[in-house]
Length: 520
Image 1 (cartoon, one colour):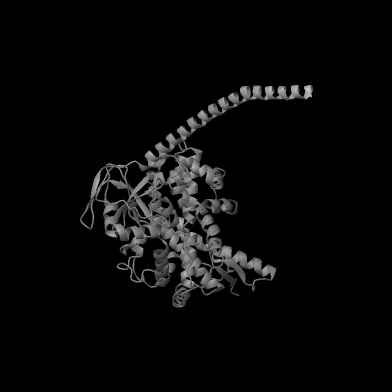
Image 2 (cartoon, rainbow, N blue to C red):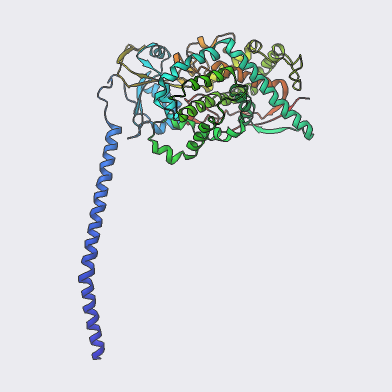
């Protein structure tokens, strides 16, 4: 009993000693750790306050007569979510609530929105406002700000080859030839396999990509291997629109690593073949221009410029082919009328004709121009799906008198923007604006139709718009001339990829099944 009592007494003494020694030590360490956590928390709170102050800072110089659109706006990020979700809905709803001129904010970037076509014409004629194309290229293709002068020097090549009939013609003829060769090779392969009479299942968007990607690349850039670039193009193109949003750089590194790697591989690919054979004269002149400036032009900028050219030649034209085929094929009257004029104006060149065959002279721009209903249907398609979000940056203070009588005061570094959908869906400009009217532009020069600007406007208008439209015409005409097809009856028009609207022609959010086979 004595031993047991002594043991219990010792245990109590040991426990007391442990409590007196360990707990004060543990509490002291806990308090020290808590102090560190509190200090860290204070730093985090200070950072949040600084970020909030940065994003929410007021622009005292803003014109108070132009309202800030609270509709669709959230703290800190402004209209970012609404802008990504559906900018057409956001901007048209804001137009109804705030009129033809209002302000929005996307993260830290503020825009003065102009919805009136007449007001935008005044904007693009103002010499104090300009399109910052280099800023566009920096965000999307990772090129250097030092290229501003280089870009201006190279502009003459666009005029020479893309706006001039003599420069444009050989590229159009080569694209037609390459498209016919693609179809011929595919038909020959099917004949060898004994499956030429079988229907081929595809998505209409995938079919459009198939019809355009290789022929366009070979016709413009020359004898390269388009298939080696195809996957990277698809990956980059799918998220292309996110690079325009003014996110911090770390956002792209964290959330778009595949896209950044695809872009890097595309940029690097052009360094391996700086002089591809059989390139278009336009591309050869561009490469010569790059070579003449190689003493200061970095490899990164060289690659970025060519990736920009590569994407520009395909990124909007592929969905342009899809939407044109979609609207034409589902409209019986349009289809019948366009088929008739294609058979009238485009020579019936056999698909299997040899290149040396005297009968194998391919379609020319002049012959394609005779297809007036096809031209009108494509313009009407572009009105429905082409709603550019155009910007102009102010570099010296200026004033704009708006149609409603207000004076818009614009200060340096402020950005003014216009949304094409505001006029494309204006019933005063285009009656029944949501309806596909295939002959709406019949015998009209589209560039002179007020409010119609699917390719932008002013000095920043897309220089490749004429070539792109010839490509779309060719793809539609080739399908109708040389193929049979089955397209299910589609009552519901698919939506476009909403975050892409405003950046050229947005592809559909879902593909449309189609079946086709070559005519015998």
